[in-house]
Length: 107
Image (cartoon, rainbow, N blue to C red; front, side):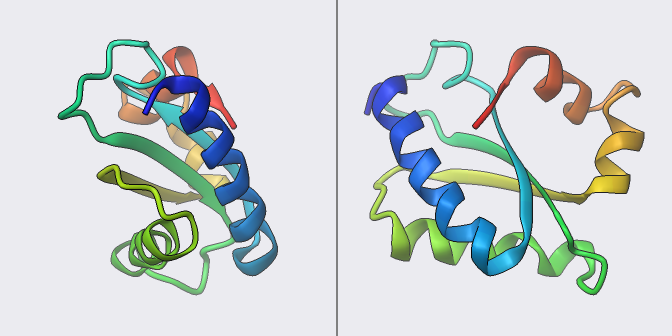
């Protein structure tokens, strides 16, 4: 799947999960955002939303299920979830979040 097709799918994915889970932002980062994805690449996403009632380990599994069931996308995905507060704190530190903000693209 090329980057443009993936972005279309990601926009559809975002619409599904915004309503259901209060997602505020999705950032595509890594090889797909840099246009260097190979057939072995996974899709790297940061999802920002209202996860205050869920611990870190219980956030991403919800979206893995949505990714595979709702979108019918046959690509592996790596999802990292943050609350808005966590995201704001980490985006200015030397973290994967800062890299995603600087080099990735918001969907």
